[in-house]
Image (cartoon, rainbow over the protein chains, first blue to last red):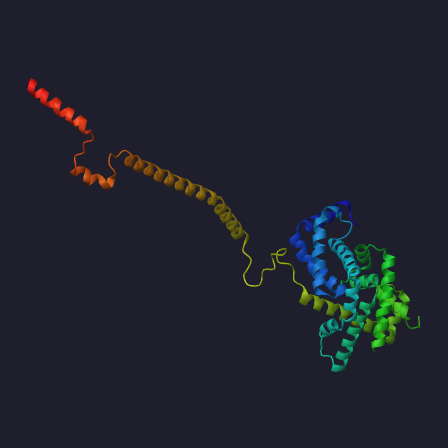
Length: 189
Length: 164
């Protein structure tokens, strides 16, 4: 159980981490960028969102009270920025999402070989494409919790902190997202 | 529990909601185990592909991350950095002093040139004859008196001689 002393130490550690922008960026940029990239599927947009995220975090560091980890706090800012970005550019976003075959070609090239047969390799690529397509078709909230859970390996409480949802709501969105993904995988076979 | 996991139960399992009976069933049932393995494998593939794609695209901004300096030259040690900073500060401080000294030297040169010019002007003004005409002035004895004055002078001279 956390004592007041350890909590204060944790808050101070987070505050000092946020004060040092260089360290903050070096430690967390890859994760924030990856989440933005998986959400928006556009490297330029993901770069802009990541940059805005760190800028906002640094400017708003006085408001950070250590109620969650630095990472969850950054992810929360990123989630909001991605939502705003997708809403502001809804038309372009969905046009791009519909023509995401280019992206799938690129990411589909990455399938670990592991000495598998050509048949199982082809099946793995199909499954991968099915998950990508399914993720692209999820609602904004479902996609967010799906990516945070299965790409960023965050637990339900961390996702709740990052999205501002209750844990039960996170579970519901995650359940629906998984159902959609499983259905898509089942169709691809 | 002898029934296979339903579609919803499989999704809940992936979220982490599982009962001891379900866990026991999955351990014994190859069909449910395979279904879960397949889903986990697909999600792991997705995670790997996202990370691979992101890893190729990501670059931490250089101005914000000076430690990503591994391209061509190694990071300088801290004392060396401080020495460079001190040298830069010294140069910055020396520039105004050097400029001030240069300005003062320049002002002194201008003052000397002005004094020399004034001396030359004074010398030219004080001459009876312009410098180019000085050779002629040496040859010719200039008498600036008028003819009447000269006659009067001559008469005075004669009278004085007669008196003597």
